[in-house]
Length: 121
Image: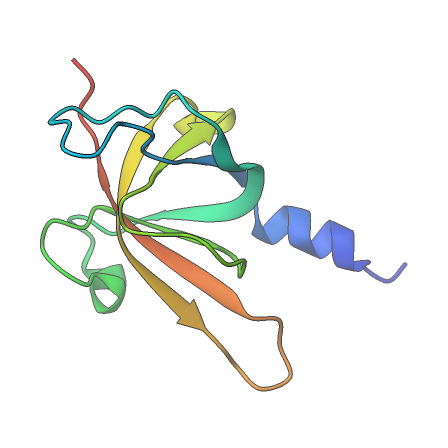
């Protein structure tokens, strides 16, 4: 039986994330992510790049700890953060440090969200 696009996507994108926007007032020292999310339950793949030499080529800077790979959609900024939903990464907060759009001829545009884990106390 041939694989469908959906079964391939689900196996390649096992993780889900919500992109949260900072809704704090201008000049406010504290971030507030309680407002409306940019996107919810985005399928993607979370790759841990800290301490693993195999993925060192994907590590943009030393403070980047994860890369979230997903299909391209507009509007993602480095002032936003990811909230991982469900699975082994569920509840993890990741601050977006850099957004890289990956275009390959004949393929759907992808984006890599370079992130650093936010320590919640």
